[in-house]
Image 1 (cartoon, rainbow, N blue to C red):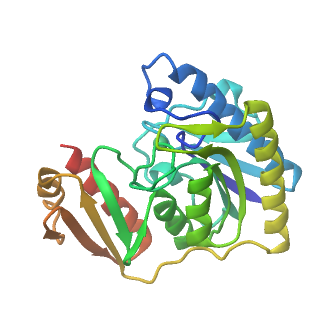
Image 2: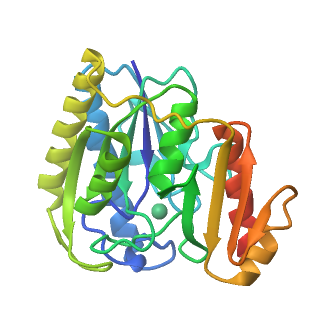
Image 3: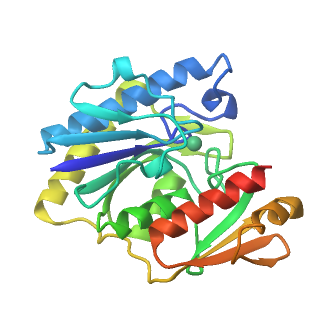
Amino acid sequence: MKILIATDMEGITGVTTWDQVTPGHAEYARFRQLMTQDVNAAIRGAMEAGADEIIVTDGHWNGSNILVEELDPRARLNTGSPSPFSMMQGIDESVDGVIFIGYHARNGTPNAILDHTWSSKTVANIWLNDILTGEYGLNASLAGHFGVPVIMVSGDQTACAQVVDLLGDMETAVVKQATGRFAAECLTPEVSQELIYMTAARAVGRLVKGDVPDPFVLDTPVRVAVEFFTSDMADRAARIPFTQREETRVSFSAQEMALAYNGFRAMVMLALG
Ligand SMILES: [Zn+2]
């Protein structure tokens, strides 16, 4: 059984501020260690419940946060960027289930640590076939394109609730209770890593029994609409052929989700200028 652990950093144990997830800041070194430990806890749990192959993908910033030298040696690590599938690099039909570690809520959500959607500087909202979603929805629908379900998420209570709301009843590890964008009541690493370990074991146990949400498969063609924060961002994103522009919103249709995913990424890269 092959598991892809798709990671981000905002939902890692103890994280409440941008400084903690920003390379170059003094605080960052502590939290990349904690990120690695959260991931190791998930690897331990998944392995104990029957996984025999684990790919970890580092999905935050430039994809080089996880400390490879401290990662459980039973896993392999996708690191660096840009890679063909970014936060979901490694996904294909051979994967049996996806675990989200360190995830965060979509932009604009109350009581959600560092809520944003893919790029905190550019993207206000994204809709996939008129479903308002966040990174979790983009990544889950790419997994769905390959027929793979998401089976677990860790993060704050709001991120976990948004993922369950979109994808269905799955195992969640709530490592902090957010009371704002930059404030939360956090479990300590010892406690949260035990929680992640137990939750991953339960999630893979449910996967073995077939008791997990269906893969999140969007109808095709997939309609992608992105609302940017400012009109110059939309000016640049709309340079991509076959897009439609309406004020700060730029949209396009893609034949299938893998194309939609990368069309979205191209728009965001252009929008950043
Ligand atoms: Zn991130």
